Amino acid sequence: MLPRELERVIQLTATHHRWRREESINLIASENVMSPLAEAVYGTDLMSRYAEGRPYKRYYQGTKYVDELEILTMDLMNRLTSSKYCDVRPISGTIANAAVFRVLAEPGEQAAIAPVQAGAHVSHTKFGTLGALGIRQVELPYDRERMNVDIEGARKVIEKVKPKFVVLGGSLYLFPHPAKEIAEAAHSVGARLVYDAAHVYGLIVGGVWSNPLEEGADFLTASTHKTFPGPQGGVLFTNDESLYKPVSHTIFPWFLSNHHLHRLPSTAVTALEMLEFGRQYAFQVTKNAKALASALVSMGFKVVGENQGYTMSHQVAVDVTSQGGGARCAKTLEEANIIVNKNLLPEDPPEKVSDPSGLRLGVQEMTRYGMREGDMEELASLFKELLIDRKDPAMVKSKVLELRKSFLSVKYTFDVKLPDTLTPLLNMT
Ligand SMILES: *Cc1c(COP(=O)(O)O)cnc(C)c1O
Image (tube, rainbow, N blue to C red; front, side, top):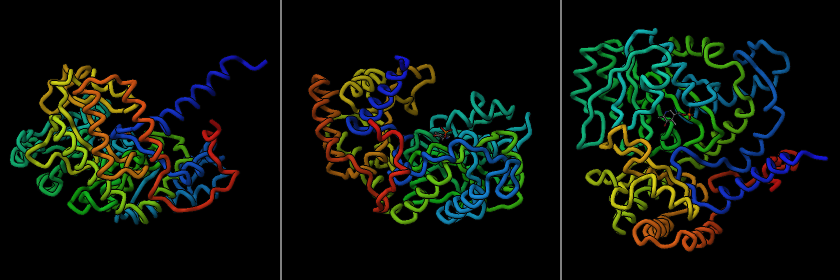
């Protein structure tokens, strides 16, 4: 007799897979899908192995192919990023940040971070990784008009506090932080600039968002699964060998032992896809985000960032106060199989975290499935039916199911027939 739970595990996995892959419209800004090719090379023996240390300097036997694979992956990621040094071992963006922060400052020293209103991630703050490392946080001032770091104010704070490093980059991230100006201010007091591109790394390598390493950032950290459509993981880059060495010599054993080796071939495949199709993809992502923002406005929604053209990234932030608030709207949308997250808007007080004023929408995943500007208008009208006209979500859900049928295969990838032995497990729905 097979355990009853076994059937349930398989059923839950398959049902989730079908729901999120075939029946819903995903607009979570921090997610994406890998290509079938990247997924095929994800589910192999590599998922069961260890390779502690750096390539060709391992503590384990059995890694001769892993060594070459890891070096090849790093080379491709460096080529894509126009950088000299890279480490693909961080198993998440947060771990990449931790490795860099810990090398740049000792516990008790100070770091200056972008204001929370300008999108700073929890890992940059005293409540997250920075705090766990015992590094003290100084917040840079906020420019409400530009929804960004206040450059003049930041310069003054940096000159006064002389932090060990400054962190830019955000999670609700519509407009680029001023990396060039802040790098100059940081360097003038001997501080380093860390640019956390978790959300926008795919846009940077696709050429629609400026490359912070070229603007003076000392480190670029990122997740490999947001606008960069690879496996869940992290990565860090620098052009400075004297900064690279201490990070690459301490990330193991300080922040990980196993670095989840099955990420390597999938990251490499995704890097090759981005080298080939990244411009097309990233350009379409930003066109779609702008199109979604304008369509929502024309249907009566209040979209954040009006005085600056709403967005320059993959994200759109909507103020849904008049539609019942972020929590209620996100739930209603889910009832119709449109998946979004509620989000604090820049002017929200932190106490509103469980019922914030906003929704954060990201168009990167649906762009991968082939959506274009006209489809953004269709999406916006579904939002109107649900949140303004208050139509029955069950009725709107049938329209979502119908719409999704035209967007089931991932574009921006190589046209290859996959060998059967590499077919991913999850295709057994
Ligand atoms: C998502 C995010 C991270 C964390 O990434 P994980 O890969 O989930 O650890 C770090 N920084 C920013 C700005 C993010 O948005």
